[in-house]
Length: 283
Image (spheres, rainbow, N blue to C red):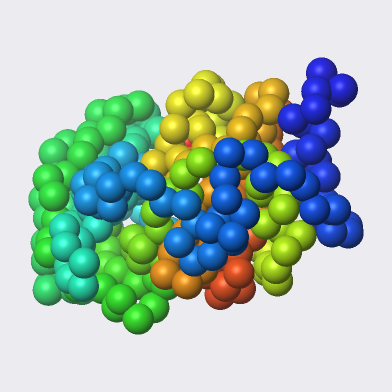
């Protein structure tokens, strides 16, 4: 409802027109919360082991550069999704990928394979029937740049002798994130009014058929975050931290086909990188 206090507070946080007055912290030591430690009480190994990605992101197809003998096929009738498996250990720069081809056309896709420039890899895929999808086996290892928030992986998708350039972006910015536990909505307001924060906004397109609980679970897993509190529908706040930085992600949706994302961080580059990476999430 319009008078729901969580929704009203959520709107205030999204706006952030002026700092809120200091509030009493709830079940959390204020100095500890606002320090780099951020009250992380869970085992870091547990957080690390939970980073087995279940999130699909959408690859970019450069259809204007498609070429080959099959001139009747419309590349817009398919989607290429990819799932990233982060490095198993800290400091490693190798990831694995799984690729999914979703066929929205009325014809069967045959002779389908993926060519990646990285390692000159060629991955053959099963045929894909109309309104069906097929997943590859794990691809890799693929080296990424850990000094950058994102690494581009380029290649091409080949179907029945025709090909289209393809780009996947590995969001290494999320690999270092971990949840901030024990934080309330009041604590979030205090955090935002007590420091310098940068903000970056984006939207995630949805099919409109995925339920809110599942969407929140996907976003929580992608961000390696603690869900602070929820309002009606998709409204929620996620809290994460990276080395030396704090991250708050505010989600707002009302059942439409787009979810508003507002990423706030004490690191402006990190906020922008996370916001950009979330646009590619496939819901």
